[in-house]
Amino acid sequence: MKYNNTLLSFSLVIALQLSLIGGAIAPLSALAESAPAAAQDEVEKGPHRGRMLRDGNFALELAIFETGVPPEFRVWLTHDGKTVDPKTVELNVKLTRLGNVVDDINFNAQSDFLRGDMEIYEPHSFMVTVTAKHQGKSYRWQYDNFEGRTSIEQAVADAMDIQTEIAGPATLHQTIPAYGSLSLPAGAERNIAARFDGEISRLHVALGDKVSKGQTLFTIESNESLKSYQIKAPIDGIVTAQLANRGEQTSGRTLLTLTDPTQYLAKLAVYPSDFAKVKPGAPVTIQLEGHSEPFSGKIEFIEPKVRDDQARIVWVNVANESGDLTEGSFVSAQIEIASFDVPLAVKRVGLQGFRDFTVVFAKVGEQYEVRMLELGREDSEWVEVLGGLQPGTEYVTENSFILKADVEKSGASHDH
Image (tube, rainbow, N blue to C red; front, side, top):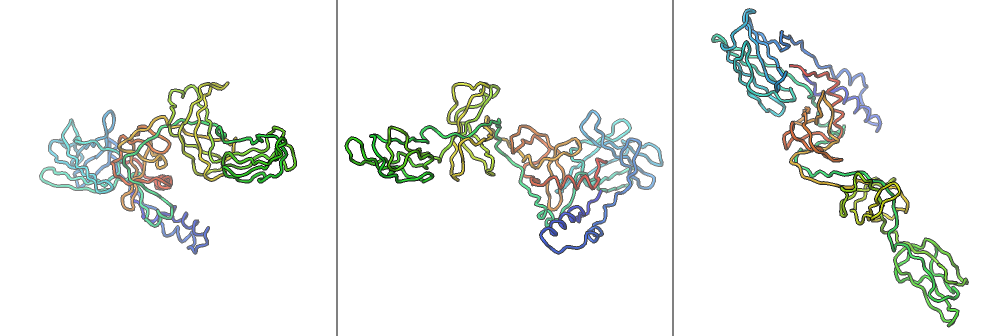
């Protein structure tokens, strides 16, 4: 299968994008005419379901055999339609993979066939060069055997916002989910009363005012001494309740309430199956409805008792830097229970399904090709790679689904 650098699917999407922003574009029919379908050559198959290669009266069948063994090449040979003793043939196959990586395979006679001396690892996507010598004559064949590969011009990839990163080490953070709500910490709310009963001669603040510690709130005329004294703010805060006015008696009651909204507590429920995993000091990522960016904190305290539903409550300080947090707001969180470094990882967002594999798309120049992955541990962002990808490989992260769709559209098959 050969892939054309100008892909109809990408052209159509770019055309639609340009039309949305008012750009001048060619008619879609013209775009379609400029993107002819890739031709697919007919491939002759042999009795072992391998590819037949012929030169005059000499022929060989090259097949990938993978029943009970790792994938390997096996070759059957004929001359004038008669079986050729494999011991009389020198054979070499070179597989040129994306990025000019060459697998050099030699063969040994076994029974009635030649057996390759190395594993044909995934993806089975390469340019195949076959050379053979028999009875003093040399033969050579070359063909493309691509799968899971496509080409995209860089300008098109940029327009489609296809993003890449370099595969390498990462730190994974394993978490458990937790849910709760925001509460004010102890001391954040102060009820203000008069030390000595008297008449309120002056109210210096109003409901909703921001006040500073030491700022005058009331002037009171004492009933006993008839002298005036002032009540000052014990903290920075906001007047959230005004319960008395000028001319009224204090009468030992709360006159107003000051609230410091700069810090909140996220009180999160942790259930018995996770009790042992959660420790004080553990990092926590908190998401609040209406806020696109998460909040970060750590577990400050774990309540010693359980609720009626057997959950224990953990406390996490949340700074109200934007000033728009409110008491009682529901929150969801991820509590970190373990972190570890791995030598090779990829972002989960780049993973796609291909045949029976989980893959990423490696990028070499303007070509993209699947890499079948053996995966290990994971977190919400990263997945450890145990095999199938070389460190330092540039791979697609954002919008990898576009490549999968194009590969599937092209009809590239697992063919040998």
